[in-house]
Length: 280
Image (cartoon, rainbow, N blue to C red):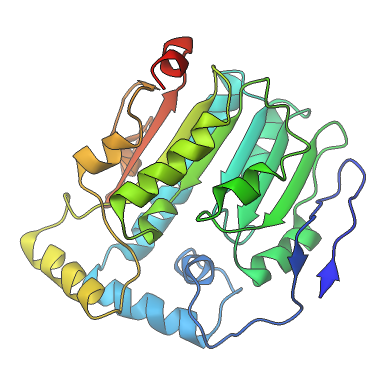
């Protein structure tokens, strides 16, 4: 086991224990997503899984790119228009172009970002690639969304008296149970102050043809898929009590986009107002 020492400003930091080895024969969503985005940080099992899912949902690669573009537009809005300077990005995936901290720190170099993902390969790449501006800070945690308390215990570089953007892009749909997923998101939001935001996307079959939806459902039933879609109402439930930012809940390819792209994921950004806190 290795422990990453806390670094200076401008260096990615990790205070979680991580292993030097991982099983390349086990599919991981972050590496499959990397494959769909055209990256090279994936293995045969990830590519095979990606190709199988693409047979059930032919627009998978397009959707992955549209989802990535939604993340970048959402972060740009949060930093440039909403004035957020702190981000907690869970399920970040493998580093690629225009990561959360790069988009945010291009707007304000003092932005601070904590990433969390449960894939050791992501950890290894984060160590090498996720460098911050000297004025800001970037930390990486090897942690699972299903352990929100553990994540919240490791946010030393964030000031939880000031607004934080909780970024949950294409990650909650890996949690099969809706109520458990809502509980986890609520635990995270309850730790944040008024003025914080939730930026989230999630797969859905609402936007598919009956034939493609049937293929998706069959892939999920047979274990070929690990993506559990939500209806529009279920997705909206994660934003209960939050003030939705215009245009509200829409397909990710339509969220503040001049050129909408077909993608079967919902996306939204919501703000926690003082009234949100009194309704808890």
